[in-house]
Image 1 (cartoon, rainbow over the protein chains, first blue to last red):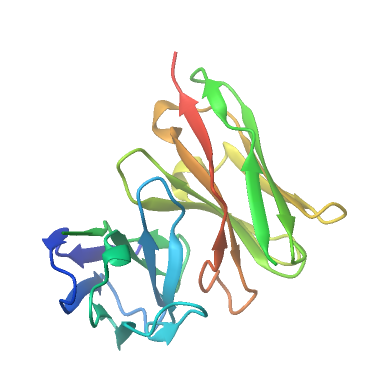
Image 2 (tube, rainbow over the protein chains, first blue to last red; image 1 turned 90 degrees about the horizontal axis):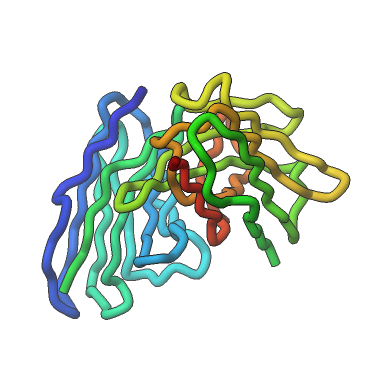
Length: 106
Length: 121
């Protein structure tokens, strides 16, 4: 199985900050990497697929980059509605696996 | 508009069985890859199973031989039959759609609100 490791596990930030979350895969997954946002009690929401493609309807302040084993999710200017937990997920092979999550707090 | 609505969760004793259902609309269950994803309390999501177009299925190792994913294309429904349930199966279970691109679900673009399964005596 491919292991996905996110860092940091949590971070504190302020509105307007630039936030970067990293995700590392245990093997080369090319660009088969997705990012989801989850708010408490809510369903995970797809933000980025294929490492860098913005899902329809997602604000352009979210961006993704990387390939191979190292990936990054960047929020260019944090908004109040962005406080949530973010998960990466690989889609190269079965079983599909998720990272442990990064909680973005005020 | 794509919608998925799960049902069938509840409290069940260890060793028991439960069948989860996912009512879908806005797309055909025959045309996309459908998965179940679960999330234990306070934990991250875990992919559980997928059914591909054509009916082939895959499972995470921990549920193989106990869970069965299936669809009924005549009514656009997805199911998860769960047998021999264990305490570590306790989780919110989400129905998730992935477009039929490639050999695995490329990304989950729609997930439902989930149905809670609690396995406890």
